[in-house]
Length: 170
Image (cartoon, rainbow, N blue to C red; front, side):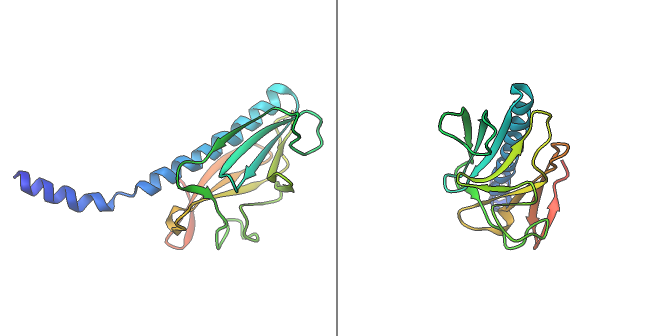
């Protein structure tokens, strides 16, 4: 009986995709960082920049106290790094049909620091956006897109499965 249980367990383990769970967690990290940036803009009554540092696989939230749209050295910022093996990715096909990039949509501006979403003191943002997260191995089933609605701050997670983007059910 014990041998049968061991054989069944050995057959089931390869089917568990830990990459899926890790990438879902990375997508949720991006979502919570976007929400944190929006909350900071409201609480501090200042513009806040959400900057994608794709080279370092991290997000920065910058208090843009002088409202110049740039992350200046004197301004306070905090950052969150994606989990091990994860990175911002350029998918072959985007959710919104835009030209592929680490982030797409009308809410994205390109700055010297990287693709940026600006949050305003009233809680709105520069516009809608998608941010893309993948893994260093390039597995397409590990691609995640984080959708951000600039007018409401709503975020949604998308997964790339079987050659198509599918919105997460959570």
